[in-house]
Image (tube, rainbow, N blue to C red; front, side):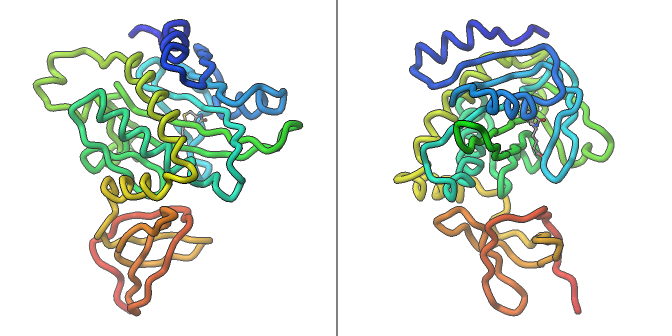
Length: 272
Ligand code: BTN
C-alpha cells in the first residue's frame, strides 16, 4: 500500500485555495497529542498531521483507536477559530457532515451521521471524531482528530459487528476488482469538504443542520443515551437548529441533548 504523498496533497490544497498546511508521519503515538503540543508551540491555524500508524490512538470516552498501519486515514487538524468558543461544538457536527460529503463525492455510498459525530455506512461505523480544546499562549485552540476506515477489512472482535470501512461498504463485485482504495483522493476530498463545510459555522449553520438531519442515522429510532452517567430511554424525534438531539421520553416530554457519553439503538424501552 503506498504512503500518502505529502507534497502532492499540499499542492492540491494550495491550488484549491484551502487553508491547510499538510504534514505526514510514518508513525506517532497520537496525532491529536502531537497537535496539542504543536498548538502550544505556536503552530498556526490549518496545521494538519496525518499518520500512517498510531501507537496510542485515542477515541472518545478514553477508548483506544486501533487501525493497522497504512490502510486507513488517521489525522488531526489544528484550528484557531475566530468563532466564539460557545460555537466550537459545531465543528464536530460540521466535520461529520464534511466527511459524509467527501465520501459521497468519491464513492457510490450514502454515508449517514450517527449523532453526535460518528459517520456510518450501511448502519456501521466508518469514521469517528475526537475534538479537544487546548490552552495555548496564543489563546484557546481546537484539535480535531479524525479516523476514517478506508481499507481495513477486519476489526477487533468487540467491534466486528459495529465497524466497517469504505472498501467493505462497496458492492461485492467492486470490492473483488480492487485490492485497495487509493487514499490520496479521499484525503484531498476530505480536506476540501472540511474547509468548505467549516464556512457554515456561523450564518449558514442551520442550513448545515438541515443536511445533518437528512443524513441522520438515529432519526425515529428508540435509543438508550447515557448523559452525565444517567441512562435515558427515548425515541429520537429530531435535531433542533443547534444540532442537539430531541428525545421523546416515555412520559410524553421532549428532552434536548446537547451531548451524551453514548447513544445506542435499543429495540424497545424497558418497562418499569
Ligand atoms: C471516536 O470515534 O471515538 C473518535 C476516534 C478518533 C480517532 C482519531 S485517529 C487520528 C486522531 N488521533 C487520535 O489519537 N485520535 C484521533
